[in-house]
Length: 339
Image (cartoon, rainbow, N blue to C red):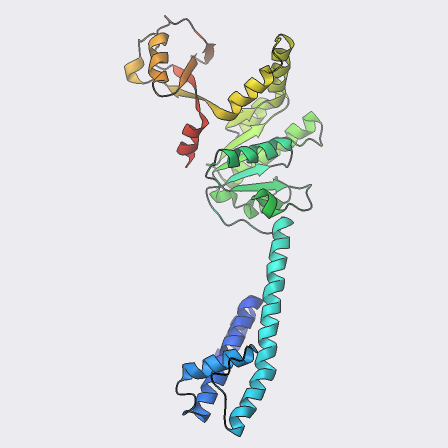
């Protein structure tokens, strides 16, 4: 019964572990045997094991050599048996390493890390976002979920790729969504706007169902689906069509052709933030608050008051309790907060 359990345990081990265990047992057995047969020439079991490993691996340093006929017969058996085991182990280890790298590139390997960022969809927006992570040294591991890619080189992109549908629990669990911190859901460019938004909402529901506390940032293309995305559980809605329309509008009435580059650079290096007004700023005018924020490298540009956004108000405007101040700050400030 005990032997049967040992055999079951052995064959349930991964093949690399089984081979290593087999090689170790074989070397210990031959090392102990040669020590018993020639104790004068192999004064300790460790010396015998050292000889067995050197001989079995065909390195053959020659520092220990059996002198008796029985010892030489044991050496022959060791070379025949041990050499095959060691060669097979090394070949299996090499094949396993290559297969793991292939599985990693083909999106078949589950992610085991924590506090990571999951991005759904491989497109130009995703690529630029990942580049920004690297440029600003954001201390977060990135996991990509996509169903269209056949392969994504880990060495080139330094992200963990999971191939599959983002609405599938199995795919999300392979991305270890339960221990993820953020998830960014981008729209599928291969679908119509209505289809892409429906797919996005299903992805939001699946993500929220697998992790109730994860922060979900989602791209929505049509206005009518914005509320549905919020109902599904999205924390932040990015309406990319509205943003692009605003850029076009800005470009139409500007003689400076670099206006879009200015906006893009601002978004790349500055972070738009809002926070509830501090007690010591209540009843102060907007100009005083702006000076206070500038001392901390923050540029005050407006405020939220009773769900109304007020940008560039009169400097004499008094700040009230419950107002949320809107400001710009260097992206490095938020990066430190994330870390």
